[in-house]
Amino acid sequence: MILPPAASIASAFAATTQSSSRHQLLLAVTAAASPLLPRNPAVITSILYITITNAIYLARRASIRKLHKRDIWAYRTTRTPGMSLPLYIISLLAWQFFVICLYPIIEPLATLCFGYVSFMYDYPNAHGVGYILEPITAQSLCMSKRTKTQIRFDWHEFEINVGKVGREGYRHPPCITYNLPHVDIPRWGVKHWPWRRRRQSRMQLQCDDIQLIYLKYYSTPTLHPLIYQPYPKHADLLLCNQQASLPHP
Picture (spheres, rainbow, N blue to C red):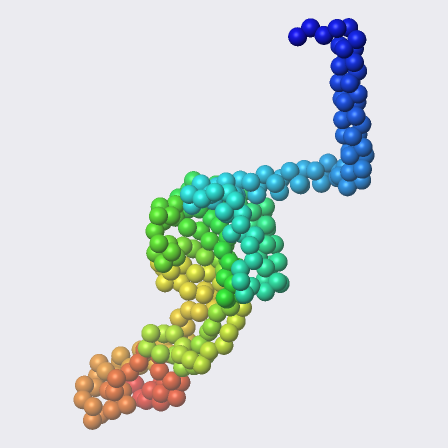
């Protein structure tokens, strides 16, 4: 379409005016926001690093779990019903610490060397959080089977029995609730380590040795009925002292 000279001049003037107003608007917005923008290169670099690491974490977890990145973001930033506000803030800070400081190092090493992936998990009912290593091959399993393959570095509430030691080597109730960091490796039988583990004192080991010696030399219950009775692996200290006071054959 060919415009007459007057119309083309008017169109060019209008375009110039519109472009000039947009440019002035951009300058005004930039001038208004300039006090809020960081000017320190270290601050700008930190913001870029945090943004990139979070984007990598979301993309990696979304790819592994076959989900969208917004689903991972919503899962990590949504406050679970019943979660207290302090625990929610701690969860966000712990997640960002993991993403910014640990994930760039742990994830490549775990994946390339051991075939594991790493992520963070919340325990709202136990009032804590945890960092988890999980085999890549376990992603298709149900949750109960996945947890059996994990290596967990947790910090949440758990109970420790303080009663007598039973045959299996663990203490029985009553129990005390603690909120301490611990390690769980289900496939190795490690639970709440180092706070919940088998304990056997030197005196108990000596008692076990004395029991074996006396059972070897005395085979009838009439000689030493105390020794001949069924003997648990971890007996009370009184029984140990009684055995230790018997003469050696």
